[in-house]
Image (cartoon, rainbow, N blue to C red; front, top):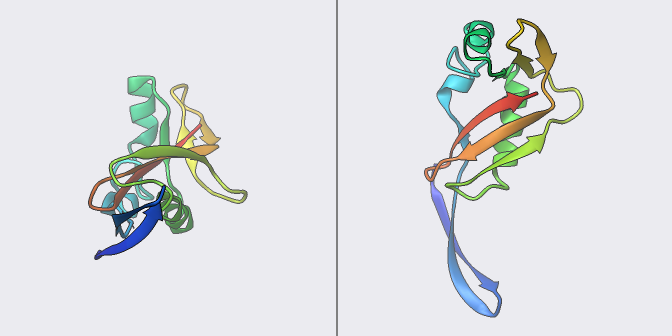
Length: 118
């Protein structure tokens, strides 16, 4: 998880830049919210009326962590999922849909929080 420091020339100035290695929060690979083994997604979507995204494969989680490299620590973004992904969204009406994009937040320590979107 080490930080790397380097100098870059930005608008004629030298600036010290610290980059932090990105890593997925543990719950995504387990049974935590939005994770591969999460069982409460359908019930939560019905109860809250809000679609609930879920990762279905480690490959999709690894893809999200790679995309997180494009996001500065402390920021977030949304990206279209690639062809062939397996992420899903549990809908409030009880159906399940294929996800189209993913929300990704990068914490200052490099931890990546992410979930699929309809």
